[in-house]
Length: 165
Image (cartoon, rainbow, N blue to C red; front, side):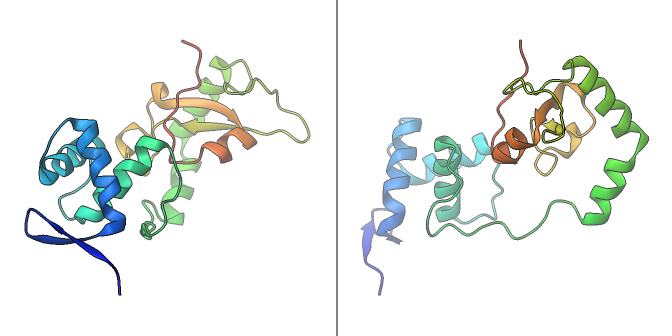
């Protein structure tokens, strides 16, 4: 059986949840649990249907740029089907934007500076992932060029913009 602590808001909360909640309360400089959770929902765009525990843990995960926190359920729903992805990447609009992004980057990875060769392939990456920001899928300001190694390492959990300002 899991150990629990009594929470002042009359809810029983698993102990592994409390350190994350404390960090959020400290981050937002608030005393009440629900206020910290509501602020995290707003800052990170979480829906009201997401459980309190997952909001707190995912917020801490994003803050720390960590890929996995033990006990946190992974998202199982894909944002786009394989068919939707195939249609998007085959569209003329995407191909034109991809060419412009490659041209603007000078054919180099904007993270490490690598040029394409036999073992290095360049990818046009969405800075803010299509899965979370579908409205930015065809926005040239949301695209950057990364080599395959940098792009796979970045994945969809990091929104770092590697373009030179």
